[in-house]
Amino acid sequence: MTTQVVFNIDPKIKAKAMKRAKREGVPFASVLKMAAKAYAEERFSVDIQSAERLNAKTLKELQSIHRDIVRGRNLSPAFSTAAEMDRYLDKLDK
Image 1 (cartoon, rainbow, N blue to C red):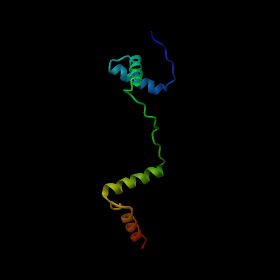
Image 2 (tube, rainbow, N blue to C red; image 1 turned 120 degrees about the vertical axis):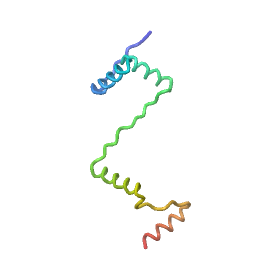
Image 3 (tube, rainbow, N blue to C red; image 1 turned 135 degrees about the horizontal axis):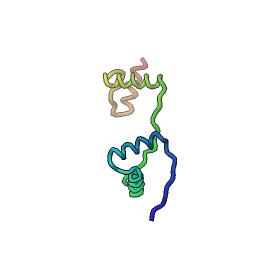
Image 4 (tube, rainbow, N blue to C red; image 1 turned 180 degrees about the vertical axis):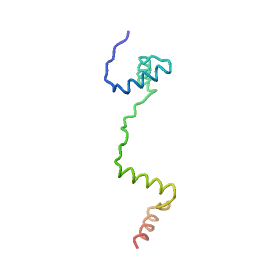
C-alpha cells in the first residue's frame, strides 16, 4: 500500500531535479521515494542553513581579511596561555 504526498516546490528547482533524474535514467518520483526512505532510515540528513548573502562592504572586508591571512599579514602569534596573550596585547598598547 502506498500513500500520496503533495507539496509545493519552486518550479525552477523541480525542473532542474527532473532534468538530472532524466539524465541519470531515474524517474523523478523514484528520486523522491529514495530520498524519503533514506531520510526515514537516518541515512540522509537535512542541513537547514540558508546561503549567506553578504552586502558589498562586508564581502570586500572579508576578501581583504582572507588576503591578509594568505599573505601572513596582520596576524598575532599563537599563545599557549591567556597571560602570554595579555602581555602581547599590553605591548601593542604602548
